[in-house]
Length: 128
Ligand code: C2G
Image (cartoon, rainbow, N blue to C red; front, side, top):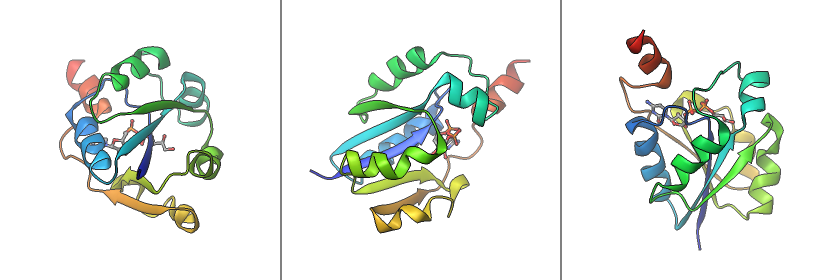
């Protein structure tokens, strides 16, 4: 079984997120999403989420492409996650291009093109 992992906040879930998750799943048989906790978002990513971790987790678990959701609590857990879950492929949108190449000694690293014209920030701004 080929296992894929990706990380993110996934707040105000939108079709850009779905496009990423769909393509990530297509790279294997089992997709793990490491979902940024509220504390990690606030303390390390300066993101204030509209939905709580539990609400964002519920939404992700309802997506056909997602097999498991785990918490992302810090920047440093990726190598341990890849080892613990025996991950074959790490995937991120290409706004992170090159940032996680250190994982290449443990698994394949794939950066996928972002979906243009949509982001959680844009949604918030458009609603103001
Ligand atoms: N994404 C995308 N297209 C968009 C918006 C987002 O492909 N229009 C992708 C991002 O590139 C990312 C994933 O969807 O791979 C989740 O996006 P965010 O929730 O914004 O994730 P981010 O805050 O970048 O967190 O340790 C890594 C971080 O947790 C990544």
